[in-house]
Length: 57
Image (cartoon, rainbow, N blue to C red; front, side, top):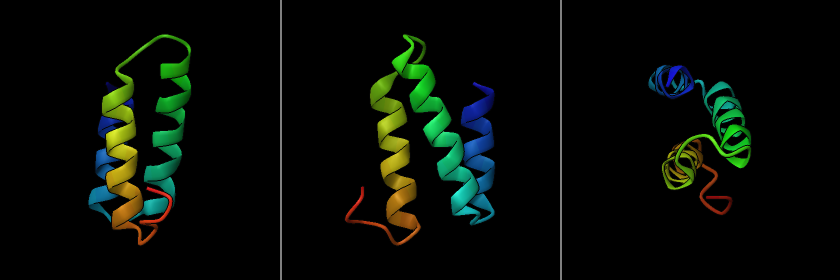
C-alpha cells in the first residue's frame, strides 16, 4: 500500500522516472504473490502514457 501511495505522489509531481521505478517495484512484489497484478499493470500503463511512452504502455 505504501508503494501505491509513493507512485501516486511521484506521478502527481510529474516525476515519471520515480513513479515508474516504484511501479516496477510493485510489479516485482506482485510476481512474488503479493498484490493485484491487474491494478499494478494498469497503473504502470497510465504512468507510461502520461510520460509520453504510449508505445510501451
